[in-house]
Amino acid sequence: MNKKKSDTKQILISGLALFAIFFGAGSLIFPPFLGLNAGDGWFLASLGFNLSDSFLILLGTLAISLKSANLTAFASKVNKNFGTIISLISITLVGPLLSIPRTGATTFEVGMIPFYPNFNKVIFSFLFFTIVYILTINGSKVIDRVGKYLTPALLLILAVLIIKAIRYPNVNLESLPGNKFSLGFIEGYQTMDSLGPIFLTSMVLKDLENKGFKENEDLIKATIYSCLIAVLGLVIVYTGLTYIGAKSIAFASYDMTRTDLFISIAENILGRDVQIILSLIVGFACLSTAVGLLLAFATIFSESLPRFSYKFYVRLGVVISFILSILGVEKIMEISIPILLFVYPIVISLYILNLIDRGNIDSLVYKITIIGVGLTSFADSITALGFDNNLYVNAISKLPLAESGFAFVFMFILCLILGLIFTKNKKGID
Figure 1 (cartoon, rainbow, N blue to C red):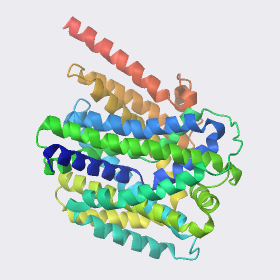
Figure 2 (cartoon, one colour):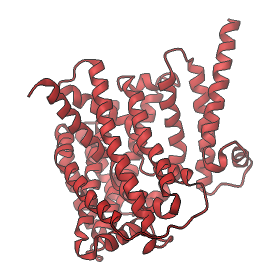
Figure 3 (cartoon, helix red, strand yellow):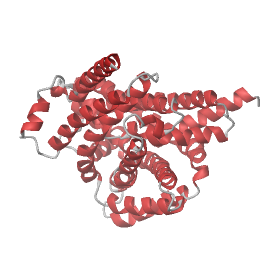
């Protein structure tokens, strides 16, 4: 096999592994729920969802790759330690505090309850996270295991579900009120995929370097190509699942939870007798996500805080995830929404600042922009917590785009322009 073919194969394996890591519990239950609540605007909602998920994954990977996955360089213009802080916060949120526990909870609610409704939740979570621990403890082989074995099986099962849904009898979709694009964009936060590039880019770079990509330019290109493969897969699957959700109005109701809706879709589209396919989808998706995120959590913490070993952090992450998974999907989501509404706009702003910066943007511009966006997103966060009747929140709610949930976009543009003008004038005076 010549080098070009070998390189292409390694990129494909890494791309499939990335897809499997990103496509987890949230990816299964959120798009159908979005489609149901978007009605005939499902495609516009899907565009919003893919923008805040798939597109931002690509944007983030590109931004961090250009810094050679050096998080200090990525956020140094805000503060020398800000990159490390945002990395540890992101992997903790996406890891053992929110996403990893949700993999166990979703597997139980979607893959186990329909068949064994009286199965003990604690025992199931213990067994699930025992498997996650075994697969993760030898971290060097995780990416290949996920890419070579779990992903193809997952894609095959998903293809069966989507094809059957397309062939399902057409229904008249309702025209529901509300901004569908904004609905999809905010729902995309829940997958937490767009925080992934912060901690996954370095892991992919190291993996590709071990596979023979030695030059920095080749490494960056291979990383971006791997990400493109993952993102393309995500867009196709998300769009298909959103469409399934829109068609589910034939048998579903708007008061269903996300997991109940997915169970209903499986029963009505796949049929009760073949609902075993659903458990396989959940098992593969959630297991691959849990393994990938636990690997990233343990790796980043063992490198940033080396007082404890990689294996210690694997065990810590498994224990925390096991305990929190017992809360259930909806409870975990209640906890996650305010946190994500605050963190996401800051991360998005950092991605964009790094992409447009060619070394000529002053650090003060970064600081002004991140502070402005942070103040805006904090208002959204405390509103989600129920503190929505105060002077601060009311002032932020009057900003342009606030009604659609994009006040932070306006604040980003405003602060960026003001920061550039101020620093330019300052240099002129100097």
